[in-house]
Image (tube, rainbow, N blue to C red; front, side, top):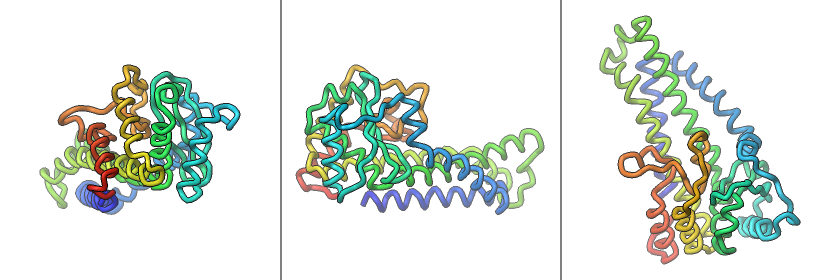
Length: 285
């Protein structure tokens, strides 16, 4: 069910991209925007592990440095059909959080903060690491990059069109849609694309939770860990780094009410409820 939702959301992104390209730039403009977006996101995808780990001053460790963490990661990789062992990293921060990065299973890294290691017991830690290994198994960085490429291309086309309309009258005589079509394509479409991109990210979080439970059996331990992270008085300060918020298991930028549609993560209460239902067997991933 989760994969079907993501597939339909991706179709929606592609449909918006095609429609915006038609109204604003025709085939040529559409291809230009796509090439620019691919170039911007390809660098992020290919070098994601190095860039993000350096950003958070994450230290790559060995089993001697932290036997407990290393043991948990290795055990889960074995349980996950002998997934290649990722780099294991610790972030020097008291704020409890974790993330996975890397373009594929052969170039992956799992990073946790010092604060997370202090507050979680081994079962809870196993649930969290299972979630991050789930992201690697499910190729979520690749899916997120594809979604970001289309959303970025839509935003790029809309930005060029708005500047063109401001300085050169672009869109006034647009035979493909007229003023209304131009207005929707230039102003509304980028917001719609962003909402769909965030919805895809939320579905991948649910999928990673379910994958963690399946490979570790720690559905309730993961829900307990999420509750601890959510209630922690110390937050990982991402106010200056919103581009990496989607990587974290606990999103410090999540909003309430209407703002939640722009969040990269589902509400933690819904994640916990879903994990408990998965444990009881009342729903399927």
